[in-house]
Length: 574
Image 1 (spheres, rainbow, N blue to C red):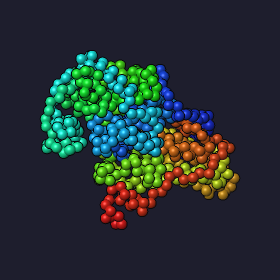
Image 2: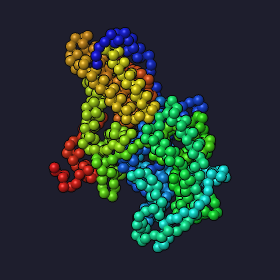
Image 3: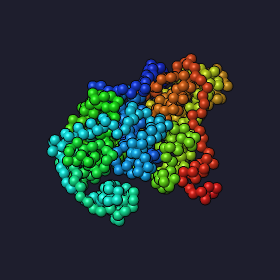
Image 4: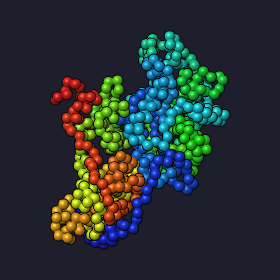
């Protein structure tokens, strides 16, 4: 940090930092309702499909990103609610059950528990994590459909579909990962039945369609309004995707399927059909909110567009329902790949949620790197060598090192007691730099730029390391009384800066944040201040600090590369 005339001019800044006290909050209360005039934020993330195990890309693309923002909202004192759950209906779930030789319900029950266990391990702090296979879901889905149908926004038409006569079931259509086009099954070249491998035949089936073309004007009007608003935080890719849909023109889309596993269509003529999962699944957010808060609570969040902001971490479009809370901010990501490959459970390629806890690296480390590599505007990749480099250099040598050396110095040289401070223009210069970074951190999280906010935390800890290096308290503590007072000031400021860092990385690394607070004998979570304040007063005692994060060893990285398919067994020792 360079010294300049402005430091002297702003000298009184550090002298006033004791005037503000930290404020605390309790995140354990999950029963929260919107408050008129307050900042009310409803947070959702893409509902994970119940029939598979989420990999690292799935986790950062939805539930982890939303969790970071949800924790930030808690820290700011906003009235927020984060709901999510497993998406359990549809063809894929039926196929998985048939393949495993169990009932569909058994598949859903098994994987719902597995998903919850994985997200618990990652410290994803849902206010409610539910599922779409509930009576609440059936009631709300059918109610919404009946209103749409009554308002003449549906039509019927017969479709040509592929039907396997041996299995007596229709084949599903398919989504192309390459171009995003939804293909009718009859467009497939040389189709085969997934179960028996027989060649299916084309057969007519009557279905219900949602007349999206008649809603195009309303959808475009809402989209233009929210994306042009001054406080709009739609991600660039989300805007591009919606624009491409609107430019191509919204078309009627089928909302029913010839399946048994799904929400039944409440019309006698279509009693043998269920709703298509793309129509049914988003309604899960409402049914899950109702399961938590009851009908009245659900409506206060979901039928309150003037008071509630909806922030959606997802990759599919929103249906517009009159007088319902609509998406204010859409935060879509691109793909997180695995090295130079795609994640594949069947090919043992990549790290999946059911194995990550067996590696021996704490959840905060994974959370840190996944946010650091979050594919916000383009595809990124999880790479083991980069993982080791970022964890060892940024998380350990920068952030962890600053906190550890600051608190250890207090514990070893001042008997664990925060000493009295005598501020100088040097502290004012530090405070100015820290407050600038803190303001940028807040701005980035308000804009849902999670990676930039994380980088800002690292910038604050870098300022702290520079401050300690420049003032050398390990030498000053051995000098004159004036030198010892200087050492006391430096380590006390550094300890307080450690507490500020603990507060800022609560959304990203909650366990490490808690560990620092416990070391500093502060039990409650701290609200985010708008400036660097004194968290630890003179005479406050701290406990013996322990390292926050592990160093990653190259030998372990090589082992994990082989174990998780980054390299073949043949190159283990190369």
